[in-house]
Length: 557
Ligand code: C2E
Ligand code: MG
Ligand code: MG
Figure 1: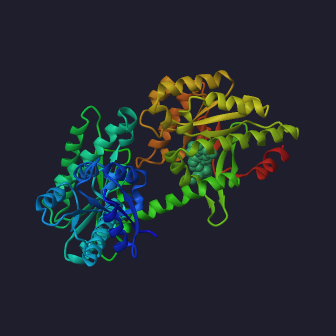
Figure 2: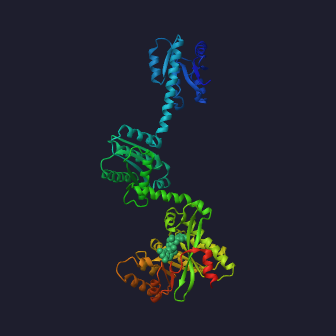
Figure 3: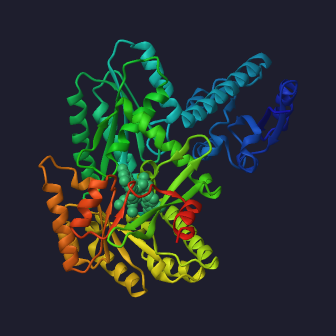
């Protein structure tokens, strides 16, 4: 039976009487005094549905028991009904003050006892349920609504006040995880409580508003607004206040705003849109807010799709190496190739690197992809050598992210050693923009690679803002210039003049030049005239699978 009632009374006859009255509905256990009762309760607090307590007992009396009871949180859900002799009003008042729930008088009245006991048990169960509900609805750290309850309360607000103009706000704290790791969890918790207090303070005057903590350092607010400028000023005022919490550390609250125009939309989707908006702020906190725009979701959904497809694609070797030949226009012969990756997806067909490389650079996956491409390139070269061909060098792209890998030199050296390939056959293309962001480190890395026998090509030369400075400081072996940079001007002849000067300058520095993106015969003629040696472009060949490349360069020659 579930309902165990503990009768605490030193007089056996009282215990027997109460047992007789209650045994039809309850299981009765007895204790002789307060001390024994406390022991039983503490041993299994969940077992008891109620306590009937005598006040006057030898040993620990009822009042002392109640004092202990009031200080023990585990016991407070168990209702205590005090049994008193008739007419002892002072005792009754005093025991109620000490936390008793109700009292019964001797001589016992069966009906009254049943009634009061059932009442007390029901009340205590309600109390437990309310507590549970509170835990479910409110975040214990900050006292704000938890996610589900926030969503529910927001929906209720819309139903009640459907005429308001609402905004859904997502607020997260950039760099919050650093607070935890630099100052410890306690300081982190304190910080979050402060943020919650600020939210309460800012929202205090608002009539229609809900807010909650969605997770860790992420909060949501839904409220009415009149002008967008009001929201921008909210985000800047909030930023100022957040700064004060940990002044030595620049904590930035990042706001995503979704201006709601259809209240029938799922509240969760509104929140997701506010979240999409904050993605634009990532990394650029000059402005710590952003408004959701429609095309955002399309871009981000597409990006998310690619991210989800990535890992399986790598495992299933869906990334394929294409080769685009380079042509020596002065000597009229093929002069190696650049490896360009292609993603062959079963559903979407071929996905071009322009679509996924920028995404991989953002999420760091490019490091894995780069390695994959280098390794497959080594395998391919090994295959050619084993077949007795005398291949020209092949260049691979090294993304800006891989350049920052302090182990880059070891990784590449290990690869060519494993496949037993002379380093001259594997050339490395580094994009110019990588040089500008961390010149010292790149200079060192390149020096080491060159010492090991690798050739370094500077890709996309001329695309950066300080190309000449880069050339001055870094000794690359080959320059690659994309023809499209030359056509980015309206002034006739200007692109050609610059190109001619660059080729001249490169000659003075004894650096060969490869012109990329060459599509027309006229371009080839021009390049020949100004003394450019190499051309890579659709005019000679598009990027192709490796077996086609083999046929083109090995069987012909
Ligand atoms: P990139 O390294 O500058 O490669 C040259 C790009 O120009 C290639 O685009 C190539 O197909 C294209 N191209 C070559 N000739 C012509 C032409 O005559 N006309 C036009 N319009 N385009 C031409 P792709 O293969 O789409 O690659 C784009 C970029 O993606 C590459 O630029 C490179 O930065 C990156 N990428 C490609 N494969 C890899 C790779 O395996 N690893 C890394 N890290 N990046 C790669
Ligand atoms: Mg390249
Ligand atoms: Mg290029």
